[in-house]
Length: 398
Ligand SMILES: Cc1cc2nc3c(=O)[nH]c(=O)nc-3n(C[C@H](O)[C@H](O)[C@H](O)COP(=O)(O)OP(=O)(O)OC[C@H]3O[C@@H](n4cnc5c(N)ncnc54)[C@H](O)[C@@H]3O)c2cc1C
Image (cartoon, rainbow, N blue to C red; front, side, top):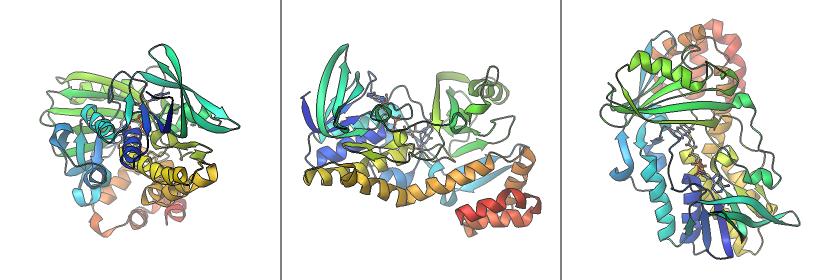
């Protein structure tokens, strides 16, 4: 590890790995640091990603794909379910990854392209000079080391602290942190090509429960509920345990993870002098689905494309880095996040009876004919009682 690099990337998840790979491939010196002892573990993810989204960044490989899924099933609070085929189910249809190996593959690719990589190396403070980020102080197995960089990329995930230490407000309101728990279960009856989502206040208040198959008789079974609904006896894990004992009484849990997912709006700013923020650290998770793997890779690549241009021009000021902030907000990803935040805010207010009405109506439609906007309109037409709930939403997503 040197004392100086062109770029320093903090965090070895998909966002940081793609950022480091992009920078190294373009010929810049880059160091990626990961505080955990191993890339990719523990996995805090249901591991679903759309096929096209993935292929934009890496050639699919069976070594890190657990399952291929081609439809999604939505289950209403009253148990009525509807299936959505691959042409409509979007990012939830595609692959279920094995992120232990997927994350490692991305980091290996970064290393092969020339990036330096250090695990068990935690960024513990920024190096600042006159308000400009100039690298980080690293904790390397108990000792401290200063690494200077012309550009630092905060890819440190949902629990990100680095940008806050640099002076950026990264607070997430408690109600917009999904409190999550997930079991990797085996010896259970699952449809290996279908992801399943359960809704309802008794199952997952202000959230949903998922079953993502990972091959025959194995699946990620997880839940996310609003942080404000979590408390003793009704934490995410309590809801999950109740569901699992009812649905999979003989299943075996071979891994258990808990974690948070932000479903808030993205940070107000994702750049400052010498610093760019990407992925979960920038809060660019889809607020409806909680999906963020693609968004992390997308922002990782875009940040480096803009950042290296600024480096080549000799100055990584906030102004020079701002095109990154503007471009991801104006991209389809940014626009989807903005739209889905409004939809999420509305849907968490719906009672079980109204959620039932929405799913019953959607089940009766040929969804191929509808955009999100026209679908909401059609649902209102079929359920005039939902007008008061959904009319305001139309003006925001139209
Ligand atoms: C239960 C659950 C289910 C999910 N399911 C899905 C899904 O099915 N599909 C999907 O697309 N998304 C899903 N997500 C979201 C997805 O996991 C994240 O959006 C994605 O991992 C974001 O990538 P990232 O690179 O931004 O951050 P991360 O993958 O979180 O990586 C950040 C890395 O930074 C490291 N780090 C943190 N601080 C420091 C520091 N100071 N120094 C050095 N390293 C540091 C961390 O250890 C971590 O490895 C889920 C999340 C959860 C919690």
